[in-house]
Structures are given as structure tokens and as C-alpha cells.
Image (cartoon, rainbow, N blue to C red; front, side, top):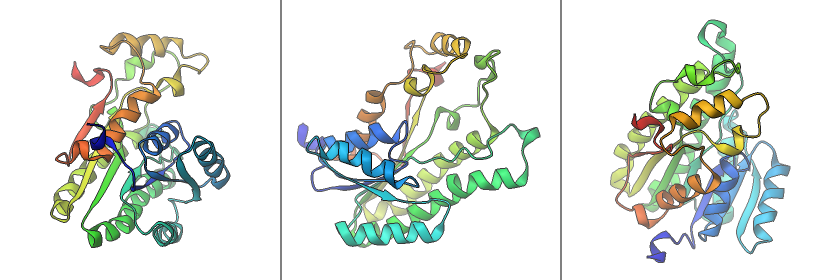
Length: 263
């Protein structure tokens, strides 16, 4: 069975590869044997994190990528492909929170700033990577969504903490699920798979916050498993979808939420 999850010989690109989800995703893919290209605007962070993986005997490198720039995206894919010969796995994990707000405080400039990365950037890097996948007749695209792309925001969970769910985020994540299904259906005949992972609340990003005790208690109470997600909760699903263990899975939105959306 271990062969099904083995990613040896695969080249995986992870956008936002040092973030809350990006770091454990990058580490998991590298641990499964992949050569991991860790990419974001902060090249120094990417290289430092890649080095921590290399020090563990894994294969990783840090790269600069600005998803708000079409030129940066095209150059990134060109150079990565030249160095490694291919991209087998693309994990679209990066997200811009620029201009996130509720509807009545939203303006056109802030809305478009978020979409520049979360919609246009997503499309552009997928477009560039899928060209090579189509030529080789194989590839795997994994989009990191959210439960906000599965159900509408449950605003009462935030209580009096001042936290909220911005309208941009819900729009982006629902669109990502539809984009995933389009990719799966259009490119399935080229042996290219596309799936989405929709995680629920992520512990390392929430439980360290001050003044959020009410939200934390409400969230755990409303989650059947009674807790937030951990690093390992995202790592397993990513390796599953990146590997031959899911060879007949495409167009799927894998919800990893401790049961939040099952009520």
C-alpha cells in the first residue's frame, strides 16, 4: 500500500508554500518523496523553509512568485519547468486577503485587488502549468478551498469577538470549487486530475489569538469532532490527492472540517 502514496520522482509546486496551510502541505509532499517547489512573494521565507526540509534529507527549494503579476507567473513556470523538466503536481494554496471586507464597506478597488490573486492569479498559474501537463499526458491539480466554499458563513459563531467572514472570501472559495470541476471535466481526457480540499477551522491560525475565546468555544461546540484542524489533518488529504491512492478521483471537493458542514 505504501507505493500508492509514494511521490518519488514527482515535482510539486505549492503556492503560498510557507503559510499556515502551505508549510505543512509542502512538508507532507516532500516527506512522501516529491521534489517540492515552495513559492511565494517572500523568496527569503521560501528558501529558509525549503532549507529546513533539505536538512531533514528531503527535496525542496524556495522560489519567488507574485500571483498578482502575469509576467511573474509566466517566468516562474518557465524557469521551474526548465530546471526540473516538468510539474507533476500543482497545489494552489496561496490566498490574498487584501481588501477583505463586508459588502457595505466594499469598494471596487479592494474587490478587484483580492480577485487579482484569488481568481486571476489562480487561473493564470493553472493555465501555464496545465500546458506542460497536457503535453506530457499527465498531471494533478489540487486547489485549497475552505468550508466557506461549501456552506454560507455562520456569523453567530463569531459572537462579540469582532471577527467575521468577508464577502470576498466566500465568493473566492465557491468559485474555486467550480473552477476545479471545470478543470477535471475538460482535462480528464489528458489524464489530468483536479480536486479541491475544503478545510474547516485551523487550530494554529486561531487558538493563539487573544480575545477570541468566545469564537473558539462556539466553533468547537458546533463541530462534531469538537476541535480545530491540525497540521496532520491537512497533510493526509493532500498526499492522498497528490498520489496514485486517488488515481480514480477527480472533480471532487474533499471536505476536511471535523463535521462542521454535516449538520
